[in-house]
Image (cartoon, rainbow, N blue to C red; front, side, top):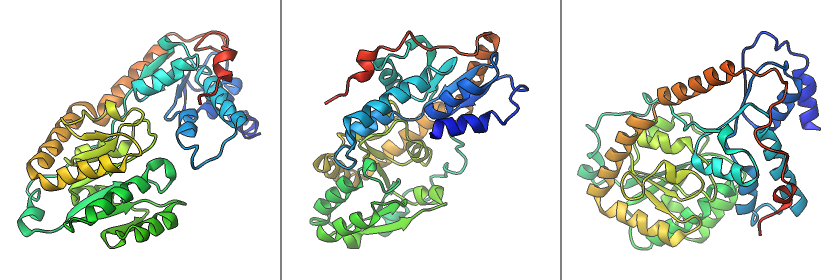
Length: 335
């Protein structure tokens, strides 16, 4: 119903004056492919893989087999609705290939961000060490199960039993807040955690933090990691989705298995204890971001894709990014 309503809305628009249309989710892509002028190229950007997210969060969201299958088919149909599919990482490209999307029509265009709000001078980099102020651990993420906050709170509780030289800032809002506050109280770590709610000063928080943590169960190419890299902070993240394409473990950040509070506590302990490693990882993260994650790199790649699609403008109103659907693949639901 939602897609058909979207189609009706699109049909009210005059799209004849556009050289190219760019959609940013599978539902909009399907609706647009059925409603746009026949000769106008359509690019589909996919930023997540809902089918995989549904698998890793089954503990929290009880989706039926039919619901999982529906998500998988919708994502496939959305991906083949355009002339080209743009994804931010190889991991997402591989996921689409596994459900039958043709590889040559999937373009990997990593995200980039405007760096200026996050880049800072290093003049204050050792202020906390000189004045023995507790180190700040920041997790900027929505309070939803897929972000893995519960495992971070479990890890912090282990550290809190042995030390009090850190404080955890949780920047974000969401339906999990009460449950997380209750968990922190039960584990005796509530005094070391501040729930900040929704914030509009993330660059400021990052620049005044010592460690940035993202313990996601599933993620694609989180912008918060890019922001942390431009802030020259060491990032400790779960090795989920495309995150390993942003962080080189041990070189410019640290990776741990998803849902592993023991590994998370161990790496946090190392970063809290060793100032040299923490600062070195932050500097290397900044170097990587400056060389690869500036918004101009993303825009250059996107512009080339635009030029390619308009140069190969097709007469057909529909282009399939793959062969006829493989029903066996689409009907298969992973255990």
